[in-house]
Length: 77
Image (cartoon, rainbow, N blue to C red; front, side, top):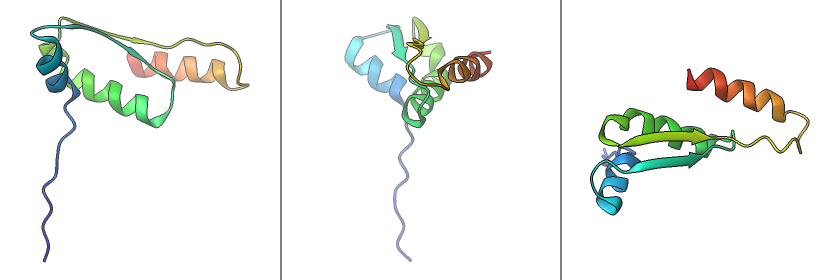
């Protein structure tokens, strides 16, 4: 049996290493899988951050863009 080491995603730890203690962080949220995973991972480590803001801009370019805004608003609560 081959065992692989599982690495846990901890972007808050990486931010602390780069920016120093308690950085103020703003994350752009597109609504896609990658930004959703990043936002959730940062939320898990938010107590180590000075502040965390997740920002989504609805440009209205996609027919479902309003639905994405509602989706993230629900997730943010």
